[in-house]
Image (cartoon, rainbow, N blue to C red; front, side, top):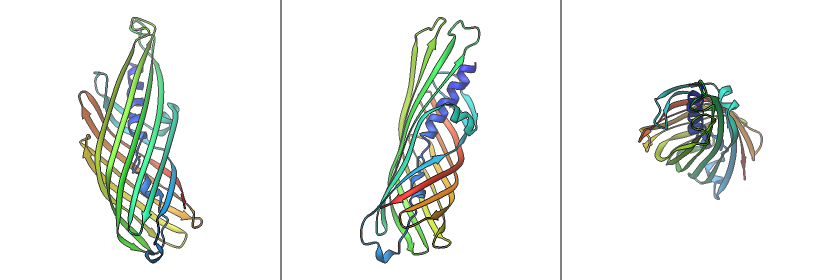
Length: 263
């Protein structure tokens, strides 16, 4: 059924796009500005809006329907996107840091049903919030490189609704939702190639509500001045969540662009 496959794709997109980044886990990469340790005698703060052009593959199951395979490129996802907000933040003092990453995504799609008996068409709406809150400690901290060990919690919350139009189910609605929390741990780092150019990346893995939750990325960045820097790179996220008939087992990956403003 066309409507069912569109519904599954939209649901999958919402679960991972709302995709943090460090989704949600993207944030630690996007705040790479660094000063020598001897001048870090006060708190510094940074905010980092970012954009992740990711495709997705995997499988999903909701509403008691059979499992559906997902294979969507970024163009497919973008066509169903109503609204998205992605931003990260960091507070740092000496070797210690507090990191956060927050994403909200709203997606919608509609599809026609065969024969138009049960319904003429179905509207699918999905909203997702994903947020990471964590802390880090720099085990390497010098003017040329920094390597942080990080840990935190990642919250996922998704709500998907179906609205039936026409046919026997005209006016009926159905809703399926899931909220879960995963503990995450990993590393993030930065290496200065020149005073302006740097390499950056991270790797995180965790579990809790999900059987496994992982996030890896690598990027190259440019420091415009003491306040503004930018990165371009590639990120992949995988999650496997199963509970009470709700299944989301997928990998999302694609290029990422971000800008950091430090103050």
